[in-house]
Structure formats: C-alpha cells, structure tokens
Image 1 (cartoon, rainbow, N blue to C red):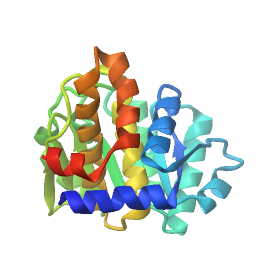
Image 2: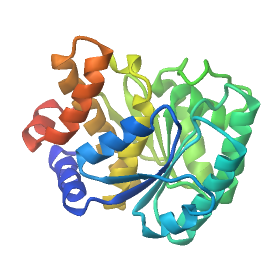
Image 3: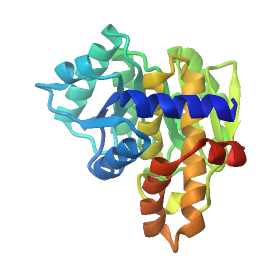
Image 4: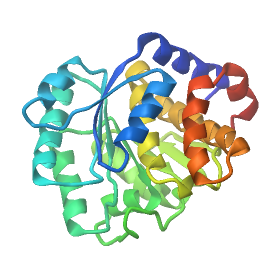
Length: 262
C-alpha cells in the first residue's frame, strides 16, 4: 500500500462518481450517504424488494448492512446480492451485531449462501461470531480488538473466497493469505455511532473503482482513519468529529495521505 495508490483511487472516485447501492440500517443512512457524497461517490439507499434488482443493474457496487433487520429487508438483501453476483458487481457485506442474537448470525449465514461477497467488513467480535457461532458480541459493539480476530478473518476469507476487513484500533485486511494492517484512526471515533458502517460504505466506493478487493479495502480503511484523525484535530467531542469527518473526506488531498498514512 502506498499513498500514491490511495490517492489514485480517491481521484477515480471523484472523477467517476460511482453509484453505490446501499441496503443499510436506519441509524446510519444519512451519515453514510453524506460520507459517500463527500468522497465523491453517488449513494442510493434502496431497500424495496420490488426495485433492488433494477437498482443493482445500474450500480457500480452493492453494500449490504444488516443493522436493522426485518423480513422484507432480508428478502431484498437476498435479491440484490444474487443480482449483483450475476452481474459481477462487487458486494460488500457488513454483519452488524453478528453474535448478539442467533437471528442475526443465522441471517448473515443464510445471505452468504445466496451469493459469495467480495468483501466482508466487521469489527473483531462480529467477524469471530460469523466464523464461530459460539462467539457472542456486546450488542453491535466489539468486545475484541481487530487483530485478535485474524484467525477467524483468514478462515472466513478462505471459506467464501473473499477479502475480510476487521476494524479496530488497528484495522486488519486479509484474503486468507495476504494480510495488511492500517494503523490510522483516533480514539474518539468509536464514540460516534455508525462510523463502522460508514467505513463499510467507503469500502463499497473504493471497490467500485479498484478491482483488487484487498487493495480497495486497505485504501478505504486508510482514508477513513486519516480523515478521522483530521477531524479530531478540530473536534470538541463526538458531535463535531462527525461533522468534521464529512468535511475531511471532501477536502482530503494527496499531501495529507502521504504525511499521515500508517
């Protein structure tokens, strides 16, 4: 991973404005849409079963986030994932709260049997629960550091033939053999709801312009962490950090990436 490669992807997103189709949760719709707009992508939040296949047909990537589950949304997710797989459109899957209830964990597994994802992004506990049903999580928050889930991440990547991103103080990205780490970010970021979901949406934007899932995921997580650090420089607390993060995504330049990348 190099700063130049990350900047190339950022420029591609801003030039192409890829349509990122999100089936995501009520809590984060506004935040993730604004983050995608700020980085230069074009977000759409469409979850009606009657239209998701048509929306996938014009999208550059599909982001599935199970945060607020309902039967109708699960049906829509399945339809969208199968349509995206048929069209070879990147699928980014976020197993929010996997391990908190059997319903969440089983729903994730059922959806993943319908279409293998290109990328799975979750926190340490979610990734471990998805790989081992005996693991439990604390609601939608992680009780495990990202690097502690490396074994589970490698196993999931091998099982589904995908890239797995484990977010935490240090982000881990693996395809089962290649393992990369991103050490950007700020301690106040977990105090803002939905920033993990925002990271997933950004992964969708980068996957839309970079056909290498490991590289796309690594670049997205680096940008998320760098922009979190930039926002924290001016933030008085979580609320202003949330606003500052959107501004940082919008104003991000090559020099900042080069100076701050870890």
